[in-house]
Length: 607
Image (tube, rainbow, N blue to C red; front, side, top):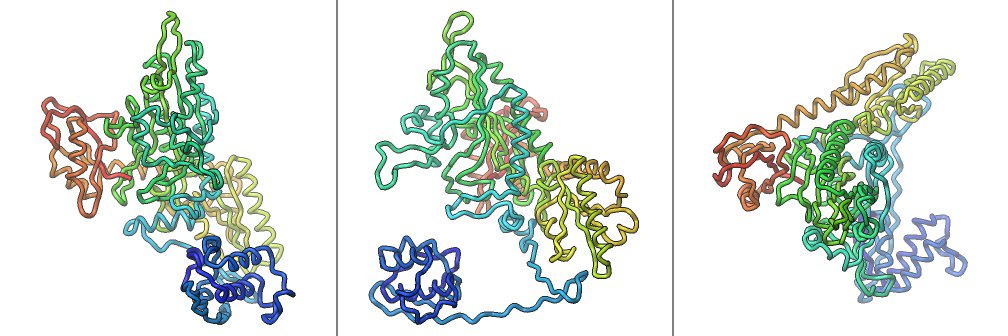
């Protein structure tokens, strides 16, 4: 039964196949040092092997316990597993050990030492095979690892560092507005979740439920939060009594679970993700409205100023707004390679809907009773995926300097002709450059690994998107300069050592600005204006967004979604109604219904 080591299916075992498995594992995990003929009584296996033996003795009832163990494919292929009817298992034939081939010395290495290097790089092209390219780049750059539960991913330090930069910046901004951080529990009781019907219906397919504790059924199932309105608002009702208790402005940095079934994609669409969610209460609608747009602009700044990703600010249509909200504002990004828009972050005015449901009332200055006006707003780790999609290329990530964990890497390039003193002087100079840059506020590292060639190191750091590479070779040592190589454009220039502390920070800011300018030009080039259905469809087929006049009716939006779907692509929907509107001349017809248009909407296919 051939089996990949990461996807071993449950084994159906009998006494004969169990013994074969034990022999295999004894060889695999214990090694050939244990004599095959050793009696069982004289050989004491380690805990792991003991656990497996217990599983084997359990026979078919232990199948599930064995499902997480894996062995190399060539060894598992040699093991004939019985079908449960007493068929004899074939003997395990030891696989022939392949001797590693000697690697040829790389250029720049000494002749007396041979060094092995792993292959780097991507095999898929961003332009022609976007899906595979994205899957490869987030793994090969060590941003994520896939997890055993479908739709869940491990955020490795290289990705989490970007989230930290976003979090630190945004957290400081909202604290300036008077928002405080708090934390509310992960679990929601069923009756509380069902308080707001429209809200629950919007999330119902995505809610994960806890129904057991150990082997016992819970008296009532408990939901894992898909968002926290229903977790927080019963307590807001307890805490708010008077106009003096307002505004109440809380935010939490946390995780949520939405049991997505549509094509999980790292960062973009996952069953668990990290985010911040703000939940605020005000005495008046005017205060609530003002905050909605304050937060929306902060989200724009996260994308444009930190991630160098252009977005369009707008309001969601009534069909696309947050379930239970009065209105929803959004920042929308766009991926030219696959022609899809992506909701980047949202800021909602909830009106008084939730306040009425949860009894969030206060006494006004006039001694009357009134319901609070509420907002909620959220930004997720989806932002990292949008950044990767926007800037990455066929060599790997391209990370904007402001969020890069490593902004610059110093790579000394000694060669075999250099003596010990010259090599030491080069390494000392590299360390000194790194120290000066660190003192200047640059996040810098030095790559002094001597078991890799310079070319391999260049590829390694390019794959990880480090904005700036600083090379220091023998000629650079002679000239008192270093070579600066940009990741975004590939441009190179030399700079004297004494100028690097001032030059590098300025160059990083220039890289940030250039990345945004290129992305903005691409974004703007993907927006077309259409007044007829034919022009609308032609723009969609070019993988563009379409700015079109429409009557602002849900039925019209549903009609567009159905009519624009093809065998190759999903139907289009409104991404947003942009805050910056073109002039709408009186009598302009809706491009789909012919009714008088009320505004221009930005349409597109989306994630």
